[in-house]
Length: 186
Figure: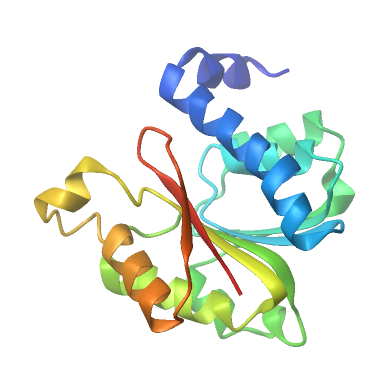
């Protein structure tokens, strides 16, 4: 366990989020998908979700996209000894979705925690949906962030998620973490 990971887990909301991610991966998503998962992660930063995904034996491959280098996430992947199961793309999600990296690719689970601006989050959700297998799961974070309900321009994830849910005529499952995890099934 790296020193960074110990610090992250000392922060109660971060630890709760990580525990919720682990629970969803190893229970709900295993039941829904019934197989090992190939996952696309949009937004990495310190690697909390990256760690949760790769810690699970049900995850066979993780593709992560972030515009930053995310060295802390890379350290966690090395610590977990899962470098062969992880592909990291340092680029904007918009560029990723329009690159050769997605040609012929399908994912069982897409996790979106990139830009929180509504138009960006909506674009990530719409383009991710096209890459999902059926059945597949699209999950996002911050759907219950207090700033979203105060009209903060930088927290449009909730509005984008609700738009996606209604546009695809899907039910959503909400997981009560501090800022809210939610997913819909394709």
